[in-house]
Image 1 (cartoon, rainbow, N blue to C red):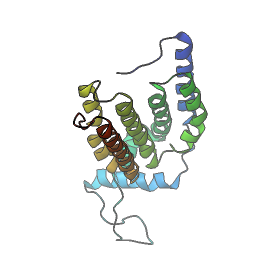
Image 2: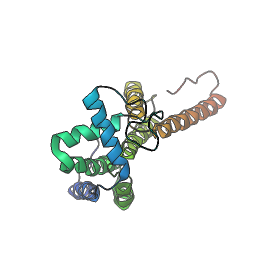
Image 3: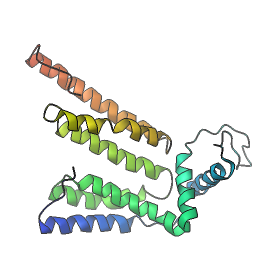
Length: 213
C-alpha cells in the first residue's frame, strides 16, 4: 500500500521532486546504443525472429548475438506509436518513476536526498537499455528494503506477496538488459543478511527460531 505524505507542505515537496525528475529526464537522443537496439527491435517485428547472429555490423557479420531483445522491442513499439517524441518521454518517465519509488515511504530527509540525486539519475536514464536496469534496481531495492523493514513475523501474507514479485520482475529484467546480475546480487545480499539474523536469533532463543522468509 502506498504511503504518501498527508501534510500539504510534504505533498508540495513530493510533487516538486517528481516534476523535477521528469523534466531532468529529457535528453538529446544521441546515444549510439539506442540506434542499434532500435534496429534490432525492428528486425524482430518485421521478421518475427529473434536475431541469433549479428545482422547489422559489417565488421562482424554472422557473429553470435546474445544481447537481450526486449529493450529494442519496447523502443521500436514506442517509435512506431509516436516517433522520437514519444520515445524521448521514456527517459523522463523512468526518472520520475525512480524518484517516486525512492520517496514514497520516506520523510523530508529522503525527499531532499532524492532531489539532490536526480541529476545523477537523469544521466543514467538516457534512452538506452541501461535505463531498464536503473528502473528494475529501484524496484528490487524497494521490495527488499520493505521486506526488511516490515518483517514477515509482523505480517506474513504481505511479506510473501512482496517477495514473490521478484521472480517475474527478474524474468522481465533478464530480457531487457544484462544488468540483471545486479538484481541477483541484491537478492544474494538480502538472503545472506537474513541468514545472519537467523543464526543470531538461534543463539539467543534456541529452539524458537523459524526461517524469516
